[in-house]
Length: 76
Image 1: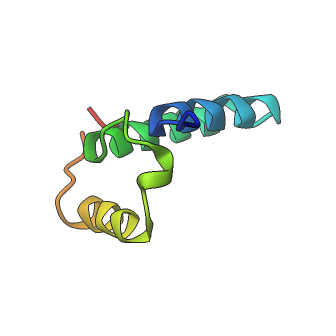
Image 2: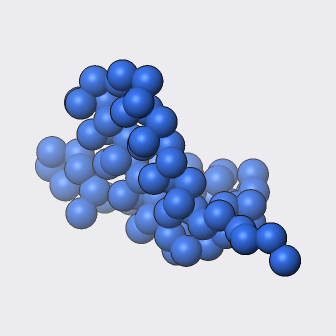
């Protein structure tokens, strides 16, 4: 059975890639803050391939309707 990459591993890979291509530190910080929000909604250990359009729509709806950010906009 093939090893399934987790959401956490996919996000770590994304951050490494975005850093390697030279995105600015503030942009990388924004990516990390968004990932924190993602992990508040999804279990970070979920297989990445198990996240589908329906779940992403639910995540974005949650951000719009239910997520409460700190005053500086950073996820807890």
